[in-house]
Length: 123
Image (cartoon, rainbow, N blue to C red; front, side, top):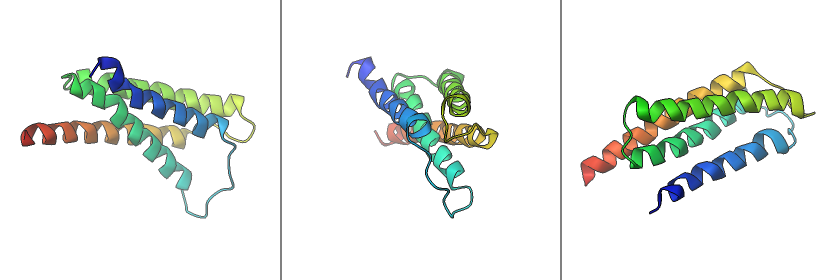
């Protein structure tokens, strides 16, 4: 499989996150407390997995794995929150959302690393 195909799911995740965070109008608040934070956590958990997976498949370990993946997620978390505050009429920038984003990304990166380790032990 060519290396560029490894990154396609991450690019698709990013496009989906642009739509969800910037283009889709904000809906009515859920009755579930902190539901939006749960959504941010889950979205970035998926992003963490999809950004770490290609690096893992190509042999990255330790800081070479988590640092670039986490930095990309941090840049997008901060950038998307700033864009929500500045470029949208129905959304606002929230520090809590960015924190949920980063926690989700960190968990996603760890899950991807555990999945690869488990897969390698089975082979």
